[in-house]
Length: 211
Image (cartoon, rainbow, N blue to C red; front, side, top):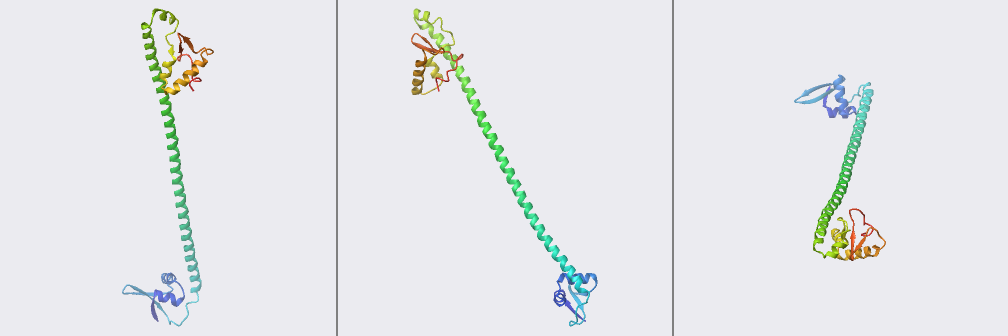
C-alpha cells in the first residue's frame, strides 16, 4: 500500500486529475486527507490499474471533450450575439440620424414658407401705405392733372413705387423698368397715364416681367 497526491495518481494511472476525483467519488479509489491535502491510497505502484477502469476513463475523457466543445460553441454564439447587438444599435443610430435630418429639412422648408408669407404680407402692407400716399399726393397736383387721373382706380401703383416694394437693386430696377416700357403698348396690365406707367398688382401677376 502506498499513498500519493492526486497529481501523482493521475500520472500513475495515465488519466486526468478529474478522472482521479471521479474514481474517489465512485469509491473505486480510496483516499485520506492529511493536513488539508488529499492523498490517494493505492496498492503496489508496480501493479497495473484495475481492468474496468479503462472504459470509465474513456467515458469521462469523452465528457470532458464534449464540455470543451460546448464551451467553445457558447463562446462563439456569445460573440455572434454581441456582433448582432452592435449592428442593431448602429442601425438604430443611423435611423435616428435619418429621422433628425428629415425633420431638419422640413423645418427649413417651413421656415422658407413662413418667410415668403411674411414678405408677401409685408409687401401688401407697404403697398397699402404707398397707395394711401399716392391718393394723398393727388391733392397737390394742378387742376388739369386731377382731371387726367379721375379715371385712375385707387389700387393703381406707379411702376417706380412697385419696383421699390420689391427691394431690387437700382440696376435691376432700371432693367425691369425698361422691360415694362417695352411691353406697355401691347400689355393690358400696364397703363400709361401722363407719361407714367401704372400697375394693378392686386389684380394682375407681373412675375413674367420681373424675373
